[in-house]
Image (cartoon, rainbow, N blue to C red):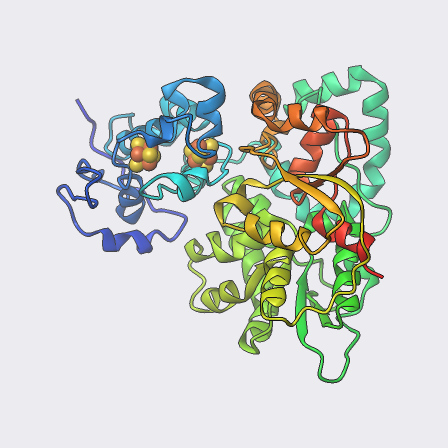
Amino acid sequence: MSEKPAQIQTKLDWSGYESYGSFGSFDFGGFGESEAAPASGGGYAKAAAVCMGKRHCQDKDKGVMCPSYRVTDDEKHSTHHRAVTLKAALDGELGEHPFLSEELAEAMEYCVSCKGCKSECPHGVDMALLRVEAMAQRWHQLGHVPLRERMFAFIPRYAKYLKLLNWVCTFRKRVPLIAKAMESWLGIAAKRSLPKAAARDFISTKSQSLTATDGAREVVLLVDTFSNHLDPQIAQAALDVFQTAGYTVHIAQPAAGERALCCGRTFHSNGLIDEARAEATRLLDVLTPFAERGLPIIGLEPSCLLMLRDEYHSLGLGERVGKVANAALLLEEFLAREHDAKRLTLPLKPLTGKVLVHGHCHQKAFGAMPAMEKVLGLLPGLQVKFIESSCCGMAGSFGMEAEHYDVAMQMGELSLLPKVRAAEADTLLVANGTSCRHQIRDGAARESQHLAQVLQRAIQ
Ligand code: SF4
Ligand code: SF4
């Protein structure tokens, strides 16, 4: 028998799902009737009840959904089971503290937030977002956020000091005992490499506006935490491309003396919603005036830039989210659009050789891969192939976590890592996600590049 369902105060704004009506049961155009929405949780419950139970998410032959089901072959790790378990939690079937229940933790455990379900499930079940709310509720019911999750979430706050810890990465690599100790103490997989920070970040070395050319089109470059502190060469490559193409580039910068801007992705992914909202507010303060002027806001890291178009809508930050979301584009989307509008004048010298491309899950979920194809097609000497891959397995911090390492590697082995290993040594590997590049490095001992770096090679 169900206990009285716990009434929860959701951390995210689920009002967008309220329009699914008050039900009873409801019908979604031929896909069947849902069960009644859970008794508590409001719009959150209705978002979980979007799952119709037809289990297309368990059809392994279709698309890239759902990597955790694909590698485990276990219904318990499918989108459908997650939705069913969440509904049970909100219906009071999992006890007084449903977000601390084993059932819910187990159901959510291998979800890598790839958004495959949001784009491929016929009803667009957004399990990545549902899971973030479940995590936030879990921390609330637990009374604290565990150390490891705090450590991953707060990266943007201490990223500028990471370069001082590069010696730890080297030492850990040389002395396996250190890696083992970190695994037992912090839960970070001993078999994982740790990313190293660059000696100098990108943002602090740049002024806000560059190459202000009369009559030139203006763009805003949004440099995320990872491109800023780990891979500033990628941000520099994007800047070189814009400048060569004659754009006036505004680099999104904080007020003088403040720490670098951040989209809030790491906080959001770890269920720290208040902190994610605080980061998003700072970023919107800077980006809104640019968006109101009609300038495109261009980002490099898929999961960071696409957060502006997706998760920001659930943070309750008002109508300026819509303005910024409409202006936000990935580098490849912007260049493809400029090319189609015959506004792109990028002198490119021919490059030769083979290129193998792995798309980040969020690039795939938001339809950015055709733009990748179009932009790489501007380099006629290259033979470009795209890997039919699902999530690389790293998925932010997921693949770093000791208990998830094996599943993360199995996800990589589904198609990405074997294809990379089989590629000739001089094949150029392209992956726009920082996690994907990390997984390729660890799983196949190969280095890969961002699209911006490929274009940088070709600009004259
Ligand atoms: S998650 Fe989507 S595909 Fe899977 S059962 Fe629910 S509605 Fe069907
Ligand atoms: S976000 Fe990805 S891993 Fe999670 S349920 Fe959806 S398809 Fe599966």
